[in-house]
Length: 462
Image (cartoon, rainbow, N blue to C red; front, top):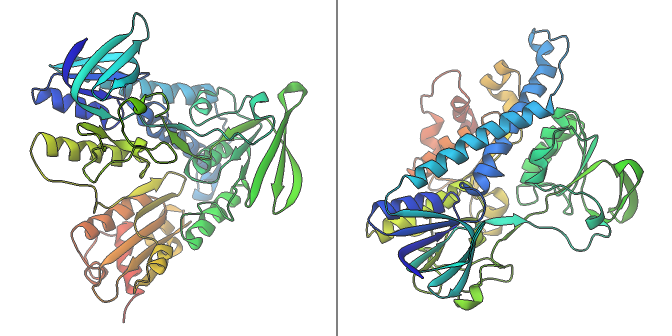
């Protein structure tokens, strides 16, 4: 049994930089990864999907270019080349990350499945060779999540359904892609494959897609997707799949209480993700989890067992790469730099990379109403944004929730081209306590998208 100062399980966007920094601080560190360096973001999430989203946007623009005075006589989507382009970028990132780990002094890398034996001891089954055991006073869990597969759909196991991981390896464009789930993953893939040439149907069990967003944001995104001939069913429950000759699939769906059949060629399961904690052996440690298996931590990301920390998606909090990375910076600065940081008051920005994007930070109008806050709402359609008009894409809107007494910005939602970048400008204002009345008369460069923040807040003039 080998003794380390620190063991990091999982090489996601918290695990890898944390392991490197701990080692550089003089801690003898072991990083255990069961699959690929980089975690979901690099291998199955942000990097590959946003690369493919970019390919899909090029196809979309090629189809719209005649409106801008540029004639393209014809184009086709080469799915194998789309996949190769994506794979090349993923491999470059993955291999670069692994090389950086391997050259870090005091840091050992081991590929294999890790399981706790007791509070401070793990066993690892390498991809080849015998089981090995390791001890450390401090252990950090960054094991992430996996696709939730529903158990109540008859015939699901009889079809070759896709997940957000396996769909990335398609080399042929699906004839008709049926997507179960109308949130971020489902909507991004739905629009992507519609632009590649698939017929796309999205089934959402709630009353609307993006059910956690405000109704007007959900409605705007619904309109955008339906304009691209994506069929969306809300209040939809899938009860059965039946595979027929030639690979065709028939789905039995209850929509608004009425049963109907939908024929398709491919099915994507996108109803959510669950923590990868079932094989960790947490029962050997006493580490507490919630009813879904998410690891419970305090505001400094330490579990109820001293010396064991959890970072990233496995905590069940906001499942975003940037949150995982911020978790790492908090843990590292507290342990090594002896700071006193916590996760309590940090703003949570996020984006959905449909086209146009959805950028969000702070509270929504719905949340403000639930909290009984005194608030006002500013809304500016992108059709009133000069830059959007000039670039030929006026889909979407800007929306801000503000406190009329303090003039502080409470929350932002932007659906539009560069929505994430526009949102980030207002996030910086929120971080720095810059009030909306100052932004109303701030001098922005013309013509930029952010310049229209003047106009957004002019809608709130007293």
